[in-house]
Image 1 (cartoon, helix red, strand yellow):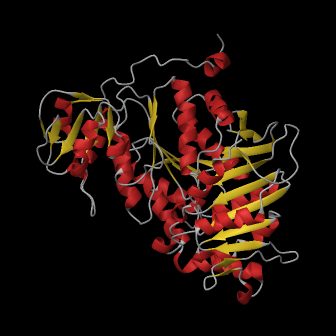
Image 2 (cartoon, rainbow, N blue to C red):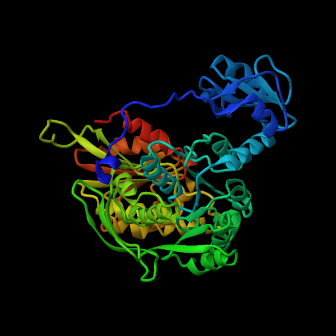
Image 3 (tube, one colour):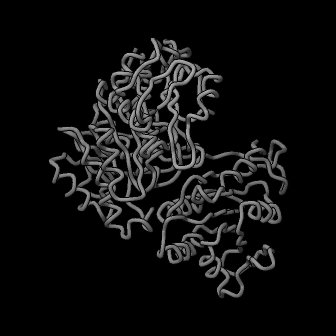
Length: 506
């Protein structure tokens, strides 16, 4: 069997019992400095009783407003194998002084027993997608022996939880790290202790807390502080902050591999053309070789992120062929570029007698850089009409009004036929589109939502709630051939709009 066939082949059935032991009680008691109620094994780790699966170890964490000990009984009812608690309970358990500290200790023990390279990923935009793509590549190459943090478990609780879930047999580990204050990634990277640290990009996310782009770059560069000896930093060559990141890495004696369009990038984009069936066909120069592969998700930002994936996979001596297959097969993630065909009421039916529109789900997060990139891709997407539902971008502080107003240019460049702006922070953009503040299309006093055609401008509605946005879309009338982009910060709640529209998935 040749290498290509081995990459494509994948077991139809699991070859191992998914409930095999992850931790035993004696090890748990030792590494968490606690006391076991008896002998037992667990096959998973969970902190939310609603998500407990049979055999899980449930951590009863205590927060400012909630005490996980209230849910221990429910966790056992769902099949938890044991619990970590700070007081005796009925059922198998490990008794510790502090459950949060115990989780950190278990994460550290898991990292200490890891037998393969660990990759850490951070960045203002694209870190979850890059983490997932690296995982898919290494999971395929290792035939199931890769591990990664799920969802966006990238904070002071999510990182040790993701570490604690890593099986001892894992040959690769990929962990996402996020922050909104200086010092947070430094603490996380010292837990992950990566062999390779990836920064996707630097953008004005969380600028309200950090104050400047330079401070954001410095906060992301903290990931290098936890690199193991001989570690590699993978950084964006096209970033205005490239030299700042490079100097931060080199000051720690770290090897730097850059990716991007820049002539001296270690993983350099040579060419990209539209691929048959969507996405992009990419050619990359890796100095000693050239690699050609397909990126399934459309958009230049996804192409650039694929370079970071290739750099990381190569840094851990992974299989570049498997990485190419993974990128070709990997579509957008829910909330991060997933594309859904939905049934709509208007327009002439297609050849199959249906009326369908394309829904692009970018509802999980938004900042000025990702908004511009996504709108640019919307403009390149063939459509009868383009509709953009844009939610407020959070954590921009005093910079917020200007960043929101600046979206008028990419919105017009994308040839958007109708825009639905959601949230009070979108007011400055509504003012620009309406030309004068008095003509802003949403009146909080009247509660009415009006569409305002502006000649060469963009017709729009400004809504304060997601419910009003749904009403505005309904009033506008979706038709066969439309493309609807939904993007905003997660706290705006546009995911519920995607869910509502997705119920009409065709």
